[in-house]
Image (cartoon, rainbow, N blue to C red; front, side):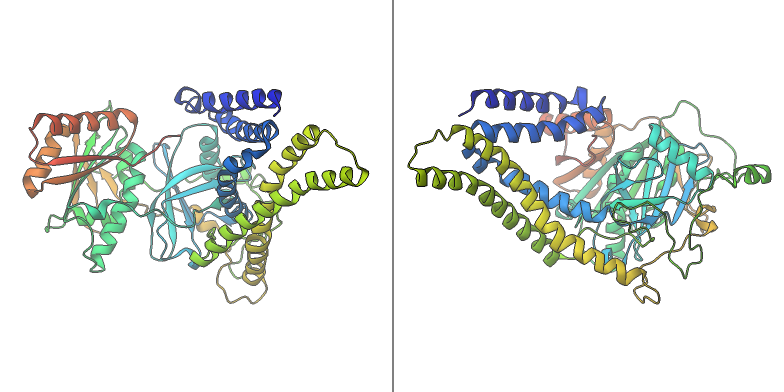
Length: 507
């Protein structure tokens, strides 16, 4: 054993633990992100050097990480672009729509990571998908917060055509709502996207005649900015106004300024149109896009690290369960092959000294071999699966999708209508949230809801003995809901038992 290497490994582990705590992770995300990767690799490398047999404990973790890394590495090479975009009148919420490939249809996607190379070639930002249409259009609501989102807003206002690289998880995790008889959903601000996606799914399933799911849903949405309510999916709003009472929705506005009394709807989905003077002065600043004709795939030079610069619809990480199983099997097989190949170095040295009739000190050889083996596991596991199951199939699909005369319908063109005003949700009229195409409106109450009263009313109206409570919002909202549930469950005041589930995670 190498005591010095063990001490160094301990310090890497200490740095990994300290930077993962809330006070560092929430305030210094970049520090946490880099220390998380470097800390783990250093912890594993020097633990190998400290004790060569520690590979037994480390191998499963890095190999699972290699599966995720291989899938994400294949996805980041594909280039797509924004299908539609909109910015609310207060410029606080950006709405992006990406056209998904037919290869992702029928697969419930909840999360996505986006990279815009023209803003940063290194920063990936995770978002929750608020809506997925039947034709594969994915909608995201992005709140302006930080330098990256401000730059994104500025480029959208200039109507720049943006190359986008996106990483989709292979499959969305199934939600637990279908297990509950009655569900109470509490959402706060833009974190509501974590539940809006599931609400849209439940509404769509009911429209298709699929009876699985809760028999009653109570949706409570609290927002400091009333404009955030406009992100409510029209189908969900229409279901909430339906007379069958399956979905009951309540909106609460907690902002400082009272809602405007004007009867004119506020603009919710339009980008500010630049004046003719602005268009003339900025025309030279806009990027030149090759292939604006929709019949020719657009191309963003240097957008992809693999030179796959032609624009296609959003591609999934895995094309099906069989593909995912192949990637997993190749990763574990490659990792163990890489491990045993690198450890054969020790056997070669032992054979060499045995042929000379010498008894060498193997300790210096063993720690060097252990260091080499730590890289062999990752390189073998990542390299074999990526090359055989990710890169080669991806290259074939890219060639088939973008070649002249391709019939796959995966290529995309870029035109000037991308940033025209589009209907992205409901409209705000005074203290009413209006549903497009109807005269129906949902009232918006001012002030904070009484969570205990909401829960008791939901249980009393339905007569349910068990109610699932799902919360997606900032920590103060989640804590207030949790305290109300504990009080009802512990004091016997509630006529039902309430189960608490936190759906929104904050990095």
